[in-house]
Structures are given as structure tokens and as C-alpha cells.
Length: 314
Picture 1 (tube, rainbow, N blue to C red):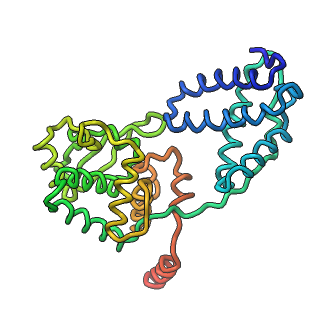
Picture 2 (cartoon, helix red, strand yellow):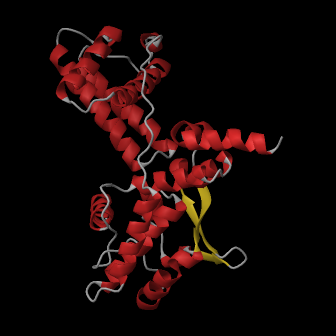
Picture 3 (cartoon, rainbow, N blue to C red):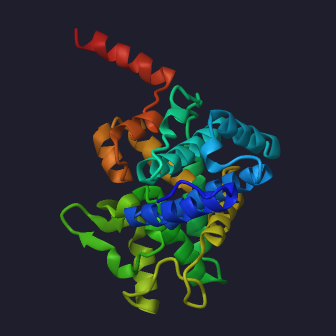
């Protein structure tokens, strides 16, 4: 494909369309595609100010740094990790242009020696005390005279997140019939489709959700979506966020969000010395290094206990 026709905005849009068509065939999630599209549209908008003064062939590291600085000035929440994401997306975009243009233009060199340090922060999670508060609260809500079925549904969703480590997108398609009972291990097995369209099994202790599943199955049947609304539709992410955050608040915790339950699941397994490879597999991580990076942190108490154990074996 020809690199450009002299109109920097039109040329970038042409390449953006071709690039997004390419990546859409790689089984990326809709949310990831939306992020890619937003970053590239921002880049095109930034280039608009150079219309008539520069062409796509003039884009270099200085141009890229100008765009990143512009983003930082516009948003106080533009962190180092956000900057790294932007660079990653733009780099893959220009690598695509490098590989497919007829003019032999090489943009890959623009990203050489471009390193952005990011601080690895421990993912927020619920403490054991907060978990107890949340479980006690949803149990009380199930017996409230109003909204019984909604409260039972919310209890099932909360416990499934907490005991399986599922992502939101993995839970949304599930139906009652997808909870397969394993009598030998007394767990419900869930076959889910994660990032990259990869399938994996995860599990929920049967004793934790037996009551909720029985009630909802009796009323709605096996094909009912566990994330159904009152009207039979599927709860959207923002409403699900509000539901879970409301439960946390009314249970007396100051935590919010959905992914925090996934982090809690991982941190609890780490604290119980579960093999990191097992945790990585349950979470559906593509690489155990991802699991180690975000969750394999230890406490001073654990370090001292490890040293004490050495003394006991001598």
C-alpha cells in the first residue's frame, strides 16, 4: 500500500482502518479493540495541527514525544503505565505500516531505545475481615423480604467472582447450566472462554453456591443467564460495577469495583502457598510471569516464618 498521498490526516486514517482490520482478526476482546481505536484516533487528531506542514513520512520520535506530552497535559491521570500502553499501541501500528508500505519506510527505528519505567503496584484486594463482612451481608440480604431473587442473584455473582477469579467478560455469558457439579471434589466446574478466545476450567466450592443455584434454577430454569436483569437482558459492565460496589459499601468496606474480587482470589491463593503455575492457570494468564509480577509478593511475617521453618528442620 502506498505510504501517503500528502495529506497526513487522511493517510493516517487510511492506515488506521487497515491496521484495525488486521488486529480484529486476532481474537482481541471488544474492549481491547476500543482502546486501540481510541489511542489511534487521538494520534490522528494530534496530527491534524500539522496538516499542510508535514506528511506521514515526516513522523519521527520527536513527533511521537509531542503527542505523549500533549496527552499528559490534557489528563492528570495519564500515568507511566498509561504512557507505556500508548507507546505499545502506536509501535504496533507503525510496525504494521513498516511491513506493508510500498515506499520501504521504516518506522521501527523510531521506537528503539524508547523505554518507559512503570511502577508495579500491588493490586488492591479485600482483606479476610472484609471478605467475612461481604459474605455475611449478602447472606442477610438473601433473607430480606424485598427483592429476594435479585439478592440471590447478586450473592451468586459475588461468590462466583470471589471463588473463581473470573474476569467480568468471562462471567457475563454464563448460564445456570454452565455450573457443572463435580461430585468427587464437591465443586462446580466452569468452562470459560478468556482472552485470546482460550478456554479454561475454573471452579467454585459447591457449599458456597448450592443454595443460590437451587433457588434460581427452580424459578428461571437451567438456561437462565446468571447476569440477567429483571427484564431478562444481560447486566452491562457499569451496572454490574455499581451492584458490586454497592454491596461492598453496605457491607462496611471502602473497596470498590469488580476486578478487586479477581485480585482477592489470587492474593488468597498466594497467601496459602498455592503453586504459582496453578494460580496462573486458574486466572487464565498467558504467562506465569504476569502472575508473578502482580501477585507473588510476600510479607515480612511470611519471610520470618520461612526462616523459622529452616530452624525447625535442622
